[in-house]
Image (cartoon, rainbow over all chains, first blue to last red; front, side):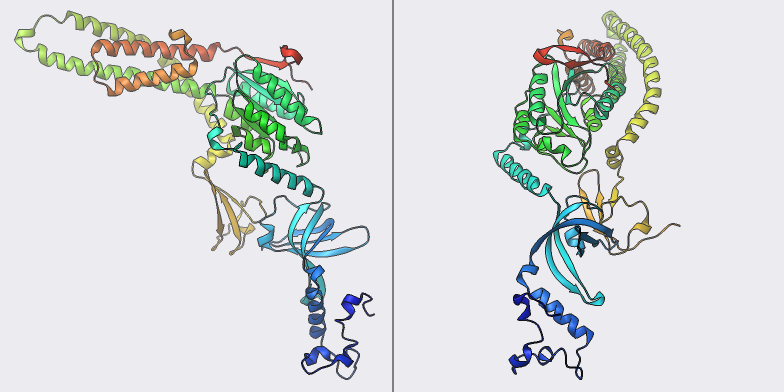
Length: 435
Length: 72
């Protein structure tokens, strides 16, 4: 019944009868086993709570275990249990700490927690208050990542001034990625759709595992040396954090920076940035996104040319018209009735050109406009960013999920709002639900 | 000379031509010359868009390339 650990027993009730002194709190000193003056449940609970909270080891401790009963409450707090083969521990992570999480915890995940142990009086249960949580095993890698990032940042490797603009119409595009898999297939099909005459050169590389960084560096160096390569996309499809680790390599970051043409990184992960992302001239969230940035849309370019042509014809017409009116004014003077031959010739030449151009481009413009109307709308609709640029925004709850229904949030909840440029953290004042 | 312009340069020059016509008070001769240059540039851009020949290749060791077909 008594705690065996001597460091704890000195706090326990039982031996306090002798040590009872006036300065001690009377309630605390009262003997536990005295049946005539029993303590209340609350008193006992508070005593236990104080015991746990006064223990210096329990006030700041790392613990490792597997998550179960994971629940992300609408308040933003997280409730879960961590366990191993024989024991379990109830855990709470409050919203302020949960908001800082850099990954999404879930049942079955091995995690490392830092925090303190205390007692939840209402349930008479001791609990672990987690202040920090990280995936177990990734902890060391993560540290390595942070250190490398800081080092390269300090060297200026990530400076915006070093980022090069992408070419408007690359003659040939290098792709450094795995030769099989959905990422490459998507890149090829989207490239072809945007620009049917696209020229791609694949430099196959390993994209995960211990040999991947060296393989990526070599492929990047080889492809950049090829003739007419104007830009390179380096990336892979989505995967777990461990899968993406090859892109957190120092040598790769330096190779990207040293590449003679702009490099777009496309490591299939929307939220986590790799070192390669920081080093690249441009970062795309996915390989498909990179292609959208790099491969020009033929329809957009045609539209641009056609609208310039229309302006060219219109402005020249106006200009000539102005001259003609001036001429008319001047020519109406009797003195100058005669010599206008040269100008008439010029007018005829222009009229002829305008007619030919107007005829040729008019038909084509009409054709392209129809295609543009349909296709451009669809392409546009595919890009979430273009939706944002039109003034829409994406609201996420504290748990990171997109809020589509007012019922998913409560007044007082923090939400984050992603805008076309930047994002906001806001609190819900009130809401109107729609049934 | 004109043939040497890249698509990007040709498009930029075309924009410049239109702007010059829109803002400048030009003689009829220079206006017509610009107009003709603009028409030629627009045609050149269009041709470049249509002429580009799709090519998807794979790089082998030692700088050799082969036609790439999506591997299953």
